[in-house]
Structure formats: C-alpha cells, structure tokens
Length: 140
Image (cartoon, rainbow, N blue to C red):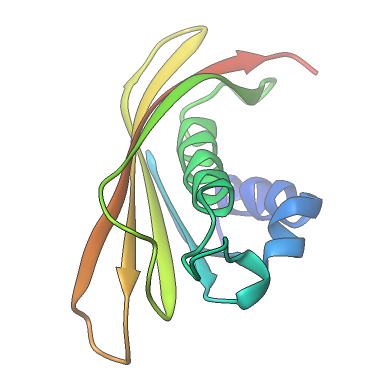
C-alpha cells in the first residue's frame, strides 16, 4: 500500500459515521476515491429508499478523500461547500460513491462526485446522485 492509501485508510477508519453506516473504502487512486455502501433498512427513509443523508455522507467523504490525495502532507481536508442533485430514488442492493478531483489549488480543491446504485450481482448500475464539492485544505 502507498503512503497516501495508508493515510486515507487510517482517516476513513477513524470516522464513526462511516463505521455506523457500514461503508467501506473501495479504491484510492491519485485524485479519485471510491466508497461502497450496502443496502440496509437502517439507512432507509419512509418510502424504503436509502435516505438522502446516507447517500450524501458517502459521496461527501469520497470527494474529501479524493481531495486529500492532492493535499500537502501537512494538511487535512474539510468540506467547505457542496451541492448534490438526486436524480432518482436510492434503490439497490449496494451503492458506490466516486469522488474525483477536478482542480486542486493551494487552499481549495474542486471535486465532482457520483453515486451509483447496483441491483444483483451484475455490473449494471444507475447513477442516482451527482455532487459538486469544494474541499478546503486545513492545518490541524
């Protein structure tokens, strides 16, 4: 494992919310991070869809960790702003949040994120949400 993968994995595993949701770190690459979330009725809203808060949480973290792959070693990252569009109900057996860096600056990194819903064991999916996020580099 690379140093950046170890750094992101350690941070991810320190997040209580990701553990509570049952989310898993699936991929760490330069400027891109994937996080998976299995369906659980504990994540559902009143109509049986996965709650927007759970979906937002995994894609926000995917964008933040993608930004961390580009951040200076002495910095951590926090979300400064994001907008999310939900395009269809969050229905599926499992979900994949993908965060990608679009531009990394000295203080701010702009990322895009998408959440895919999968049903069954196949590779077919539907994009259920898109995010635009600004992530700030901070010195702890």
